[in-house]
Length: 305
Image (spheres, rainbow, N blue to C red):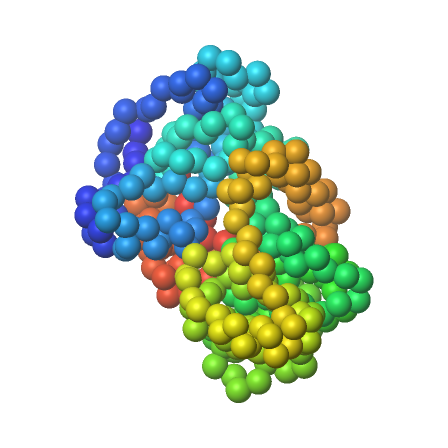
């Protein structure tokens, strides 16, 4: 089979031939039809001390199962998070991290919706939105952000503001249901909001906090780091909530599954529409990474083995 790897930090992505892996206990072997490209994986290529397997969301058909697998069988269409080599023709999924792809949905739909949607829905839930409150979503055109905009509306937000890096993304974000769109460098982000979902971090934390109304909440789910001044919170009785999807997946599997079902229900009802910026062949994985690195994507970036 074909597989993408790299040999050194920041090194080029290489397409190689590799043996098809064998599923171990509790694992499924999946023929990959779609692979989601994420910012954390792109960052690891350029920042990790040692080369890592390129994993992430995958979707496709189960072609073999390991001992102890009870929920799936060969021929099932599934999606899940791959912790090994996912940029490949075949990849392994742990049964606990796998869910079925319903009839009427494609593999591309699955990788654009499930993992990114879980993060967006989890961050939104952590904000504890009330009926009629107003919301701000940073990185509003990203794979997670464009779903967060739609979910905030579906959860009853009276006004949703999308914050983006480039004004050229404004029409796309408005098409998702955003009432207003602002750019990061703007002097003001408009009227204050009740809660903000931040996927960027770093220097953007300060203006995101400033955009909150008194008593507002910011949910930070970025891997971008950053520092918040305590005074900025005290002066308006504002709060910051950290959200990590892995904690939910490991510690609250029932909630994780309930969120997955909610996402598919909203998708089937036409209330949640994942957008795909582009589909790239495995040999063009470097081009897919370049789109993410440049922050030019509108929606999800997908590899198609």
